Amino acid sequence: MDRSNGGRADKMDSNKPKISIIVPVYNVGSYLEKCLDSISAQTYSNIEIILVDDASTDQGGSICDAYAARDKRMQVVHFPVNRGLSAARNEGIGRATGEYISFIDSDDYVKPNLLEKLYDNLMECKADISICGIEGFGKSNTPAGTYSAAETVCCLARRTPFLWNVWGKLYSAEDVKRHPFDERALCCEDLLFFYQMLKDAETVRYFPDTLYHYLYRPGSLINSGVDEKRCTVLSVLDHICADASVHFPEAVPGLKLLAMDTVVRLAMQAVEGGTKGADLSAYLKRFRENIRHHFSWKSLALCRDKKTRFSILVLYVSRTAFHGIAAVYKYIKKGSGKTPGME
Image (cartoon, rainbow, N blue to C red):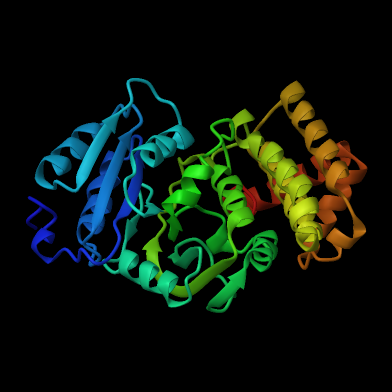
C-alpha cells in the first residue's frame, strides 16, 4: 500500500469537513500495524491521524514513527513517561484541528468505510453524535434510529454494549473539547466521557453496521483482576447516578442497577481472582457499602438475571455470606473447567 500521503490526497474531498482520528498507543506493537493499516485505508479522505505514544516500552513508538514518515496525514506525539489512556486522548484532543473527532484504540481495527458511514449517518438528521455497531463487544438489541439524549442515557443504564466505549462514534470536536477525559478515572473513563457528552447533546444517531472491530485481550485492564484502578469505576458510577438525578431522572433506576451490577461483578472478581486476607475483606466491605448506597427495590426490579439479583441481595445483607457463596461458585466453575470470572 502506498502510504506516502495515505494514497488518497489527490482524491481528497475539500467539501467535506476534516475528521481528527485520535489513537492512544501503549505496548500493543503486535496489533498496531493492522490498526494503522485500517485507518490509512479509510474511504473518507479528509482526515488527520494523531498517534499518542504513551511511553511504550515495546516497538510501538517506532512503528508510529515509521507510518507517519510514509503518511503525511499522521502525526506522532511521544510521552516521556506513561501518563495513562485519558491523558493520551486529551493530548490528541488538544492537537486536533478537525471539525469532528473519532477515537480508535490501537489494538483494534476498523472497516474502510467507518468514517464515511459515521459522517453520512450524522448528517442524515444533523445529529450530535453518530454511532455504529461494534464487532466483538457483545450484541445490541437497540434498533437503528435517532434517539434523544435522555433515551440514550436510558440505553446506557441497560448496559447496552455499543455505549460502553468511546470508539465507534463520531463527535463534534467543539463538544469534545468542552468535555476532556477525567484523568483521575482509571477505569470506565469512556463511560464518564460519553455521559458528559450526552448532557450537551440533543440527538444521537445509531446504525447497527459493525464497522469497528474490538479486540478482546486477556491482559487488558478491563480483563485484569480487582485493584484500585478498577475500583475507580465506583466513583464514576456514583457521580453519574448523582448527576442523572438532576439531568436524567427517568434513567436513575436503571443507572443504580448498573452500579449495583458492576459492584457485584467486581466483588466476584475479587474472590475468584485470588485476593486474600485483609485485602479481600476490605474490598468486600467497600463493595457492600456501595451496594447499600445505590440499592432500591425499583432498581432491582429492572434486573432480569436471577443470578445477579441474588448476588446483589446477598452482598447487601452480608459480605461474609457473599464471600462464602462466591467461593463455592468458584470451586464449582474450577471443577467444570470454566475460566474464572464473571460470565
